[in-house]
Image 1 (cartoon, one colour):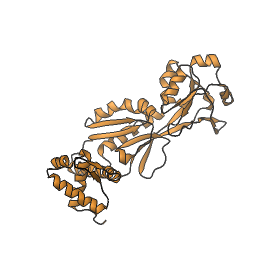
Image 2: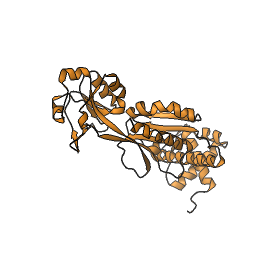
Image 3: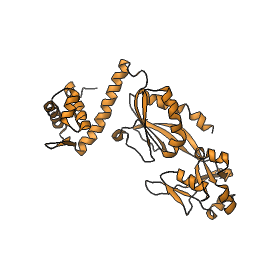
Image 4: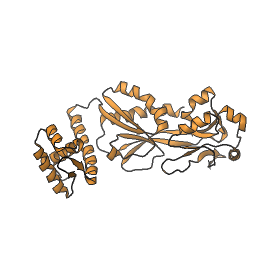
Length: 307
């Protein structure tokens, strides 16, 4: 591997990141212990080398260009990894520490991950956790996340994927709805029922219900007077209050099935599932805090699979 940077170039990148974070050459200079003029000259040299402007400068302020913003996000991540690698070698990171940023979907977050976090932090008190609960896709580099959990994650060569569980699907309804509308016995009964639909927030597409019948996989896409998007728990709440049937993950409705506020139907046609996957970026160096959290979650896989 040939050499690409000298100490001056790496220093220029570090000063650039300080200036971008502070939106000020003067503030960056104070942090670095140099003069504002030195910061300005260093960044000008970096811009000349790159052949692109990184900041729009006025007499009173600076702001990143579009290209500068992209360069900053990538450089910030690279510098963070360099610092962590250095600390690793010096033994400063022998105990997991630092900020762990996680993106998790709403249902899996509330019912699987959030209840575990106090136990994780009791094991690793020097790790602070920033949790982003949303069903949208994220950009690991641009948004600075360490890990994400997604359902039906698409293959991505830049990410390591670890299966957490195949979450079982069930169709449920309230006793009041079943008393009023009757209990479906076969899949052919579904069109006569109110089947609450879930829509993908990204494109509005309704998610088909998944079944197994006579050894074959079957799907049902019905019309309904109710649909919800973004948060599956909306469909569960509708079902609990008698709106109709709803297919969801069994782990979400375990308490309701146990206390009788929801009843599982069409059990002979169950058996389908959807995978929840843990994702984190490829890299030669994975921070201790990330490794610790990955190992912590993987220890719970057998527990979830047994439920």
